[in-house]
Image (cartoon, rainbow, N blue to C red; front, side):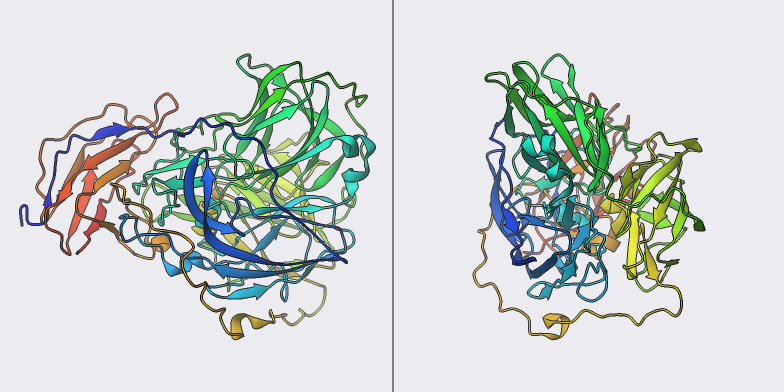
Length: 636
Ligand SMILES: [Cu+2]
């Protein structure tokens, strides 16, 4: 045994603080735009692994059409989305890198058109559809004529693989034209779309195959499985882009939070001074305001969208930031992130636009006087102290075959959402937006605002009013839009039914799932990346499908610790391991001064074989590491 398989080259664990690397200021760019033609947006949308550049660095992620984000879809109310989704996704390069193997299921996918008030039946907005690799699915989604005009987005929604796919950058904007577009002051403003992604990348420029659960730190997560990764928040695929504006010029910014996990608390500040440039909000979640509202900061939970008018300040440099924000994680607040730089320069523009700016009537019915047909209470809870993590709605994890709520369409209901967790959980419901009435028993000051995603406060209660439009029926869901929570069970099926006997289900038709699979894509579109000296482990068998992490000879193991003061005594034990050196205490590993810690525990396989070792230790509260990691040594 002894040194048969392993020789530790020293347990003097080294601190390695990862930070966003490149300080490159690229120019802002818009995603590609696809327009509808003759009332139909008819396109083939290919999902594939593609090489792109982020902050001067080559990365290799899953994409729509080879770009991050995917193309923007533009169409009008009453038109039709006919998109063929082609799943040509391939797993990350693994065998040389030491990265754990992706499960085939992680490449199953589908599309959800977030916020659109469309039918889930047939080939519609059906999140129960599964499109395996090498297959395709023909979506056919008619927009109702009274679909509000505004900003929506599409993204993968396949249960248990949505998180990883969004961490690759999969997503794209949908713009329903009309509405605010025709308000003269808005029409005159230069329009910029900003799709914010949350990319989690390992040193190979790929998304780790396991699922890290973000908790804290500069890297924005540190968790039980050791995942040496970095996290980036590009706008339209550009890291910290530079935008220009002229003093006094009005621009219309349409912002999507396409992150899987992080809430963005947006602010524009004059560089160095902290003085804020106000934002004039004109829409929330794709639904316009009647009059603009001035904001110093705007909170976007994952899935939220906002539209603002921004007027250029005096000459100088301004920064669009996501401020430090506490999502209720035990690891502490998310750190501040610089999203973009705004340069105000040139001759001053005399723009007569004054605020508050009258816009147009809200494109939703007034439901404030509607009789309440039903009230429901929905509880949100989870346990995150030990693996496996689990998140539940009304005490149950998601089961697509189980209908949790039957809802009669054409009615108005009051829902009370009770969050038992310290984590915030952004409530998102498909099809029908809602109005927030109370938070923790206090009247919400803006009950006229419509939302499709709203963050439930830690250990708090939100009540809301929702109208179920009569023309959309069928099975759909509500869920937490922190997608790691959703993938771990925090989703609930609802059935929208008309009065009377339930209609028969409408199954999808077309080539999937009965048709022939597409021919294989041929040669891989990427070359293998060079090996990097680490592995990561997976502690969530329900996500990793039980696949153990693998250790290649000569690799280093890195373990990311939770935020907060933690004393941890690393150890490597097991047959074939010879520990060298004693235990080392770290009085404050974890989050400190906004930085997260990765403990690197180097060891070396001297003779590979099929064996198991454990990396464990004694963590201080909270007990993040009750179970040791299990590493399989790669036989080669
Ligand atoms: Cu959640």
